[in-house]
Length: 165
Image 1 (tube, rainbow, N blue to C red):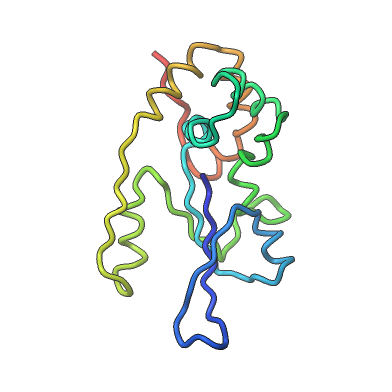
Image 2 (image 1 turned 90 degrees about the horizontal axis):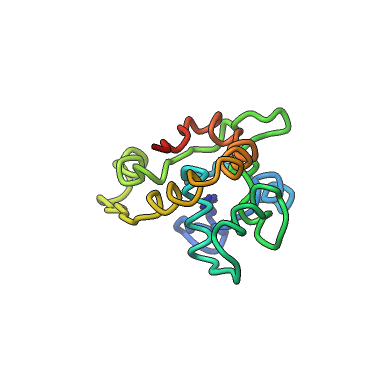
C-alpha cells in the first residue's frame, strides 16, 4: 500500500499537521498540495495479496490477481503500480519525494525522525509473503503477467522478484 504524506501548516495552527491519501502526486498538485512528500512503498506482489486480504472481495485470490494483472475489475486502479504515485512526466522519481520501504519501515522512519520525534516502533509481522508465494508461484502465467504490470515498481524501488522454489 502506498501512502503519501503531505506536511501542511494551516494558517490558523501554530504547528504542522499531516494529510494522507492514495492519490497520484499529479492529482495532489492539481488540488494545490505541493511537496515535499513521503511515500511508503511495499514489494509489489506482496502488496497485492495484502490488498486482497484488506479488501475481502467476493472472488478467489487467484481470480483477483488475474484481474489486477490484466487491469480489469473494481480494484485494478486502487492497486496500480506505486511508481504512478511518485514519478513525474518523464517517469522519474520526483526530487521532493522521500521513499520509505515497508519491509524496513522502522529503520527508515528513524532516519527521518531522529531529530524531530521520539523513537517510534513501526515493526510489522505478517504472513503475506508466504501467501503471495503460494498463489503467485503456483501459476507461471499469472506470475509473468504480474511481473509485467509491476515492472516499473521493481525497477524504480529496487525490489527483487519472489523466489519461487
